[in-house]
Length: 185
Image 1 (cartoon, rainbow, N blue to C red):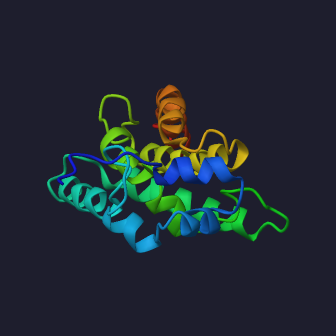
Image 2 (spheres, rainbow, N blue to C red; image 1 turned 180 degrees about the vertical axis):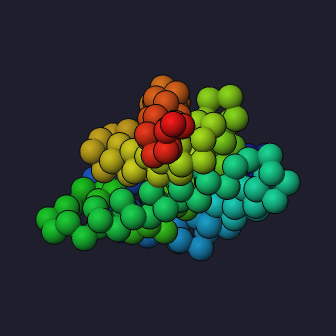
């Protein structure tokens, strides 16, 4: 007998259903961190293989199609925030016990930060604004995941929220830079 397809719970649906720490929920379902990284798990496009998303991000950065500041800033924001949340004692929900690697590999964060957040039309145009934009997306993704375990994936919401503030970031950066200039006498 040949199997055309198999349906089952994705890694994110497993973490949201149980209410137990993410490492235990994924381990009970047979998912390992290595499988999440390489993509040997069921899921949506961009949700399964962190490795492929990183390869795509590297290609976009090398060819200068995507600005590296948004991608690196986003990864740094997610890692720093997830470490801080992980260090807070007493967090027993699903995502607060997840370290940075689980936040990076489980879900569509790497896909979103590489292919959606780097859109040149909606992202900030100034370099400091891009760093802040990316870091805020990473920060908000972790906060949404930890704050609302029923809504496991907060990447797109974080990107849309920061797209609203992209013009404000550019305005504030330009205002700060112009205040540092020496006036012409």
